[in-house]
Length: 194
Ligand SMILES: NC(=O)c1ccc[n+]([C@@H]2O[C@H](COP(=O)([O-])OP(=O)(O)OC[C@H]3O[C@@H](n4cnc5c(N)ncnc54)[C@H](OP(=O)(O)O)[C@@H]3O)[C@@H](O)[C@H]2O)c1
Image (tube, rainbow, N blue to C red; front, side, top):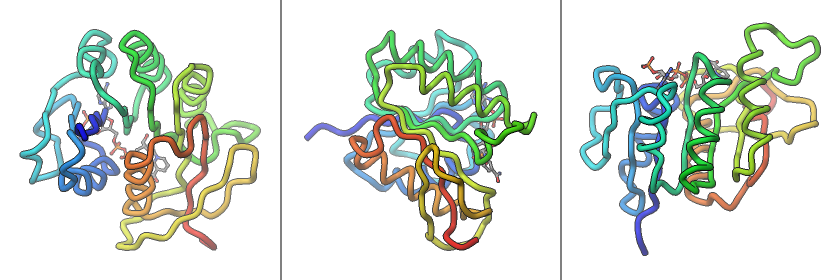
């Protein structure tokens, strides 16, 4: 069986750090870390991963990096709507189908908190695509050393107020292991009873 090719966009991010720690140990996964500066990579042991310095806002850098991948995991902050448009276009042009995109709790609240607008618009862009997306809407992060989570579907009330970074990383790695799960789903993720 050939290795599954996974690219992490925004590999210097907090959640990406946890996901990388899990995935670098998986021999059936060929990991590519895409980030603006290797100096900001938080992981120490990444010798099995390919590293690309690049900017998601730079379409040609992004498209080159996505070419040939099986799964894109976007762990980004900043101009998320523009980034989502670039990612969708690059994936469409390269025939890559599966994306896991980290958004946020609260993006369907009315009225919409202005800080969450970019998360909402990015989710709208991903949902309007033909991609096999899984959008995750986590609650607020904690550093708790625990894995304890539940998910809610789009349209259901979001639950809870916190989620450990380790729990969210676990959800992401499970989807990477079984990408056929949660296709075209948009899930809230929270710690039960929090
Ligand atoms: N904190 C919470 O409680 C909470 C709750 C719900 C959702 N969220 C959201 O969940 C997402 C993941 O969280 P996180 O803590 O892992 O975020 P994070 O640590 O801020 O990571 C985001 C990453 O995006 C990268 N990035 C920004 N612009 C880029 C560009 N143009 N090209 C390439 N990379 C770029 C940053 O890289 P650089 O190192 O180059 O800056 C950074 O590593 C974020 O959007 C966050 O806002 C957070």
